Image (cartoon, rainbow, N blue to C red; front, side):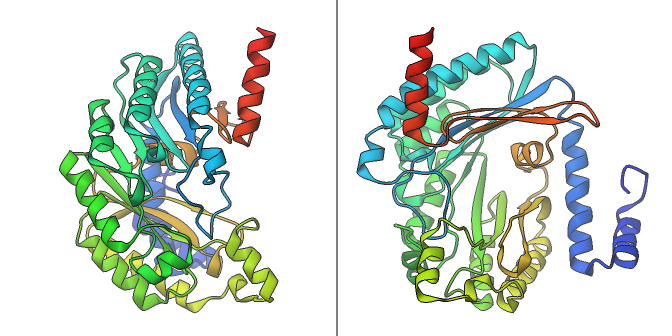
Length: 367
């Protein structure tokens, strides 16, 4: 509708009248579509982004089913993983250069990339710099999602390599619920990590929140949003608690016969999302990307909100499938995006770190 020249107001009216979309959701969709249009103008033909996977965490959250490793045995493989990863980053950098593509954004995610030591981060980012080859990036993100993994030295390393964006994620500002979901940090530690990122001078900081967590009602979530807004982060991503098959919370519910986690008409989560959207947009934040997951509480969505001009571009490029994404590391998925009407090809790296390391060894033998 926007591409056809309709105004935002006209789009909202059509969504409500013809598609029976609820008023708040219609406004949300129209604003996200406008943000994607602006980003699409940046992601022209011949552009791409680079994603680097660090699939390790200090502990595993009880709601999580990502391929991330938190046991001492797996954490001990980090040096070998980093060796292989750096080789692959350089290889992919050469491939991008040979294809004549321009890298717009780099995103190092996980897992928790800041589980690496400061020297390991320094080595990783030096390698990325070599692969990028001096390109003027629009955005360079390194997730620091777990407040218990960051130090001033690590933030200093990020800044020295030109990182422009990071993510420090409280999920909810309540120590009891944090313990219940397997987060090994306190609310106070989140504030300490956030202040550390600000003091280091990281230009953009994102905070992730999760609505609908077990034990968290809408009033607690609304208070969390108010406290986060007092910090004025550049981005706030509001997730809906999603029932993941392999998550420990799901396994515990199955053992006890608790079906409440599958409450798709959950009123508290609906109220949490509605109040968060109202508070964030009232404080000058705009929604800029949106996606939904299977088995989300209340059948609701995940939304990224941003202050003006601070959009997380990689999120839009990747979710909107606007350009090629070259992904490196265990569990990473590359996307080759053709022109209009053409297929999007996905290339999957081995899912587990031991498979990734084993596969890398075979490649070296073959070469």
